[in-house]
Length: 140
Image 1 (cartoon, rainbow, N blue to C red):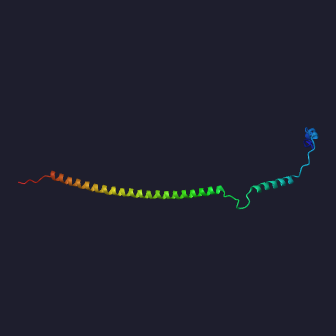
Image 2 (cartoon, one colour):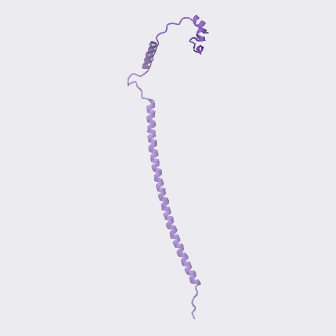
Image 3 (cartoon, rainbow, N blue to C red):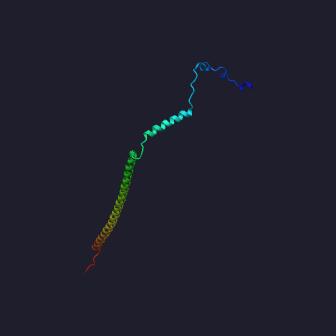
């Protein structure tokens, strides 16, 4: 169990890269990373500020805002046209329904009149037939 927890490993005593590291030239002293990052930030900020327009007179109107405004106007126009179309369709439906109901009433009245007229004609014809077929009293 003691061999399991050794403080020295085989890579520490027999490192295959130790010869390559010994023959490598010594590294140059590095600049502090914070100083390099700060310089990079300053240059980036200067480049960005140089590309931005200076002052409200040099600012151009944004093409996207104009397109968005035009699209909004078109949507409002389409919405109002849709509303007008829906109103027209509802009005036409109401007129059509009223006309159909009126025609139905006229048809019912006409059918009632024709039915009464036919009933009267049949009754009259039946009366005539009965009078023809009835026995006539003899006169002597």
